[in-house]
Each structure stands twice: as C-alpha cells, then as structure tokens.
Image (cartoon, rainbow, N blue to C red; front, side, top):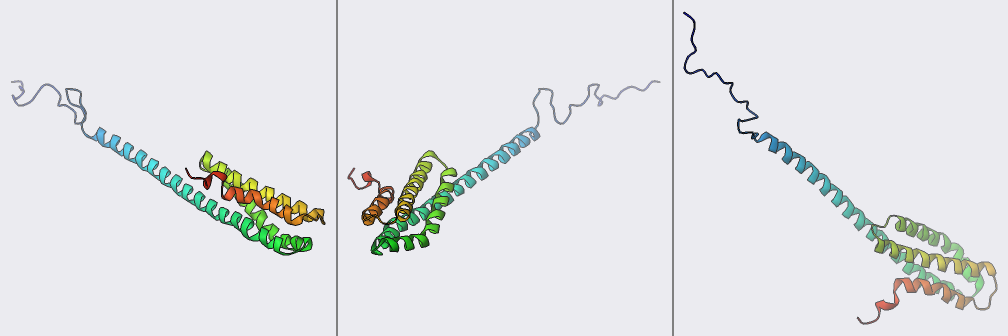
Length: 173
C-alpha cells in the first residue's frame, strides 16, 4: 500500500522567517535602519561639537589678538612718544617691531580661519589697523628727522584706537 500523507503534514511550504504571506517583514529591517540613523546622528553630533570647539578657540585667539592691539595702541605708542626724541622712537621701535609683525601674522591667520563673515570682518579690521599703524611708524623712523614726529605717532595710534573702540560703541542706543 502506498504511503499516504498524514493529515498533519501540509502540502504548502512553511512561510520563511523574514517574510510573511502578507508582505510584511520582521523587525530586523527596522534595527538596521535605526542603526544607520544612530550612526549618522553621531557623526553629525561630532561634526557640530568640533565646529563649536573651533569657534570657541577662534574667538579666544581673537580676544588675545585684541589685547595685543590694545598693547600696541595704549602702551607701545605712548612709550615711543615718551622717549622724547626721534632716536628714542627708532630704538623703541626696533625692539617692538618683531612683536608687532607677529601680531600681524596672527591676525592674517585669523582672517583666513574665521568661522563667518562677521568674524572675518572683525579680524580684517584689526589686521588693517595694525598694518596702517606699523607702516606709519616705520615710515616715521626711516624718514628720520621730521619735527612733527609726536603728531605722526598720534596718526599711527588713531586707527588702532578706532578699531578697539568703534565710533558707534560709545553712543547711546
């Protein structure tokens, strides 16, 4: 007698574990999607943290450079003026010129690494004021002998003070 199939056996294949007859998939697909979203989210978070850290570092560097511009305007120029002679100005400038050049270099770097347009404009204004003052003092020293050297130092100091305290900063608003 031929073997008959028992009533417990089914003639249709059993559904696979990942796919049901109604076309839905199991939860493992969702886990992969969640993992991808999590990885992308972590990457975005890391990039945002790095950007914020760079911004804080840049602002700290600008604050340091502003203090150096303040030294140039409020300490160095008055000391040069107080030397009493053009020869004293020349001697003082010889000592201070490398520090001013380093400040110019630092500000140039800050201009190129500024995180935004406002920051770039601020660093550019500081750098341009330092360059103008430096060039005026260097021209005064190299010309040797103008009777108006004290007034020329005032002219060199003016752009530094203007960039440190913008004209509209003191007006009530």
